[in-house]
Image (tube, rainbow, N blue to C red; front, side, top):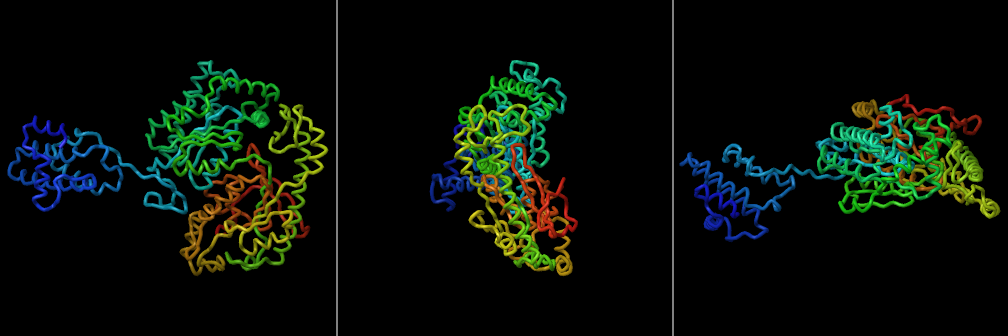
Length: 636
């Protein structure tokens, strides 16, 4: 018995059995072989002690009702309070052992005694991975994070001066997480400022010495953060990204205080800072800003000068992430030159680790990513799904033309890059129409001219950019790439690019499926994204997304060109990622045989072009103003 409990019992005048007497009684009854329990038997001993006390109190209640309240309160206090708080189990799995004691306390203690006996600890929920399509539970049958599991959710707070690539990073990261089916939204403070119609948006408005403007900016930041927390806490959001400079220590403390006040200690918070030390990259980023809404219609020279003044205003109070966050064990990631160098600290939690892994694979190298389905196969002609058939003669013709066209486009791209590099000025000029990319140009003098050494040696010895060709492990995909010269193209087969496996329905037509498996046919038609084919190996679109994850990360990491020869489901999933399609659009996208998609990552997004094979001309022609659309047949 604790000293405080003994004192309370003595002052109340109650006749309370001591701990030693209880031990003696248990020993004499043959229930315990020792008089003093060791640490390993502590829990078992106290449960036995509590049960014995309960029986004693029941007997006493039957004979002396008037004295019950005082004696019961004193005795139960021993059982409830004799365990130090630090040794009490916090796991939800201990609930079963605690329930009998709680029920006994409700019955025997005076009304209000439990409330006055001390504070209660809310149930702690385990937090672990949730992967749509690969995990499920009662509260999350589809694998998405349940609304109650706040500890599995994530708030990402961007940090950095203007023109450091924060919005570029947030858009890519949000696109990736949404593609993985984790509900993610960006909340941009600058957009709220523009929506609210703040007239003064020149450099002076961003000066920290401008107290009136500072108060307005603070209020805008709070309103944007409130909107983000509403999304996370009340609208089933999984990840919210606060896109703002958050460049001062005071602002970041305010953000953390607001999050903890509304969401408590469980919600994960990651600070993500983007810095630029490469002056060429910084100049290019600044010139990109001149095309933004803040400088629309302005003279580029005036706009650039004003923007640089804005940056200087922010620099007055700028404090990068580092010592303070590490001292307080705050998770953060610091990206330098958009992925050239990455520093991470205290990364914890599934979503935080996923974001960190993705960010480690960023690069700005100009390159082309080509996507196409295989040529027409024999099973395509008969309408059968799945299988591993050969190409039809028309499919072989497509393969030959595809090889010639890719060779031509590769040469065309290299020539354009060489020409652009010779005419690029670094630092960039404010009137330049297109932003140069500092990751691809010959060595320039500081005045922007190409050195004689570069002209004579490097340009003469120029070699084409490496080009990869990836196929699935199915014959129709491999045969579509069979004419590429393996000395000029690095060809590789990947099981991740295989067509969706139809399980027991492999080799059937959709007409046969509707007849033989009518319930399955209707189920797939109702929700194709979440449907999984029955039988050994049967897959659904969420399975395709999960096995394509390493392919997407590799596409972000690599700096070479690549052609992916896949299948309908694979092409849909790839295009859904690069085009940022909504969840409901993925599984119904129209991707017919004979189309070739070209994507070029840019600092502002992705350039997208589509080419269609003309069988008669045996060549590809660009499709003007192409728009992705749903397939007419919703079962395909």
